[in-house]
Image 1 (tube, rainbow, N blue to C red):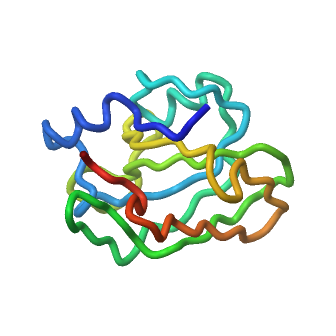
Image 2: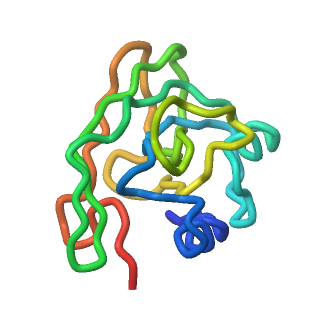
Image 3: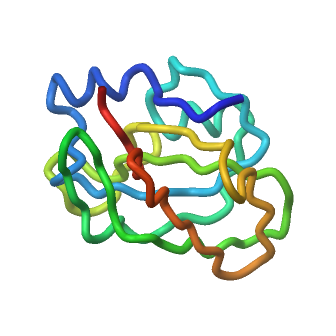
Length: 142
């Protein structure tokens, strides 16, 4: 599989149910998941057999320039040592920010399983996520 956006992501940007600038955006490691573009919520991923194995803090130092979204590199603290994890990017909060909402309301953004160091094979403990330092960064629109 290649890296991809979930189809409801651009719809969420257009109807203001996703806000990359205000909402709390997080990354999680997920294993055992077969990507489906139609999935909308984190609960869709876990309902399809995906297992979340650690979640980052809210992405910090978010920037938006020339249709590109970037943020500081982050870490994920994993609870199990296993192979073949992808990275799930999602809005964990309501569109207005604040505390995490239920997984049935956390909006999916993108799934990454291809690239340097992917799929990830973490041990237990902290595993870094280093976002692309090229032109694409985390998300490139257009």
